[in-house]
Image 1 (tube, rainbow over the protein chains, first blue to last red):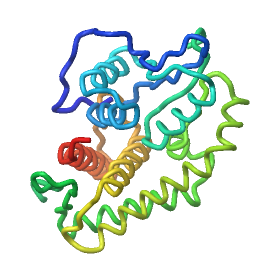
Image 2 (cartoon, helix red, strand yellow):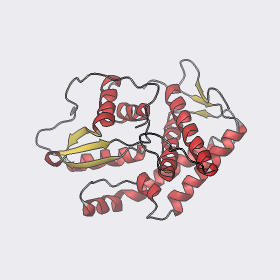
Image 3 (spheres, rainbow over the protein chains, first blue to last red):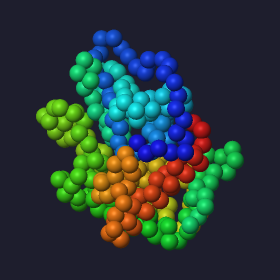
Length: 101
Length: 158
């Protein structure tokens, strides 16, 4: 991601998998990309997933520093809907089984 | 260049576009090119591949199936967003409601993804070049990022 003026790092807090359901082993991953602005990725996480600003920023920083982040967990159909929505926004997202992610 | 390209009235939801005629002309041209790519682009074009990326990393079959079910709708929505932007560029001072704000954000992003692919942008940003055309494209890429950042900053809270 491109750094922006709003490049505020936050510490590690809660587990990111807020949408976890234990018997549904698929995840939506968002991958780092050199074009998308950090503020835009944060905005997408806030507006689409409904994360608070701090959590959205934390996930965005995870994408930026670790190259990817799990942003949702659930059944395959739900993850396909999330991936399609991320592609609407222009984020680079994929889905996979949780144990293969 | 306009100093503050997007302004929201205090307490309101709508964002006013404050681009001058040259800026609106440039954006109109770029969005027109984006629509051309989306509607008539070559499937093998890497820019188009970035706009409609693979949904699975290591499963070509599942990726092809996902694409078969989603690519037309994704493309149609991107085209609609681009047309919504064009509609706001005809005259100065257009006001964007929340739906139009999202169309603008996404179209600015699609333009940056497309130009970024053409320019080979990396985490280091736009590579320096002696080619005047590539340098001009690099400036446009940076300008689009500036616009997107300014629009994000002007948005109403949810």
